[in-house]
Amino acid sequence: MSRLRTALLMATPELAVLRTYHRAARLRARRTDTDRGEMAMGWVLVAAITITIVLAVGAILLAKMQTKANSLDLTTP
Image 1 (spheres, rainbow, N blue to C red):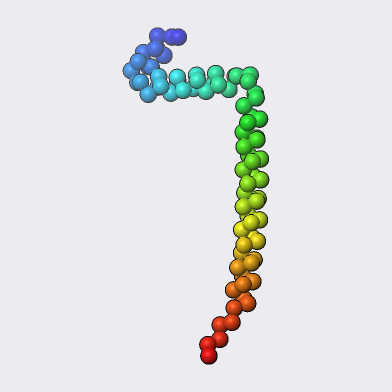
Image 2 (image 1 turned 90 degrees about the vertical axis):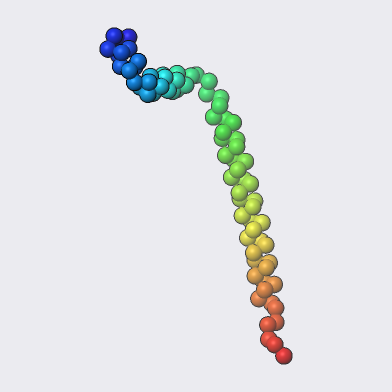
């Protein structure tokens, strides 16, 4: 590392922190373990199926409640 860069990093600690984060991100991007995506895809599928089931049950309940509400006699004697 050049003397100017070292002096600049020592003068402003924010730049040193930013450089450290940048270096860590580069190292994380270079990793070759690609099996982490399979776990995320599984959770996405579970979430999508769960949301679909919840929406279907909600639609069935809403239809039953609307049918019952429409069948009530609201005339007063």
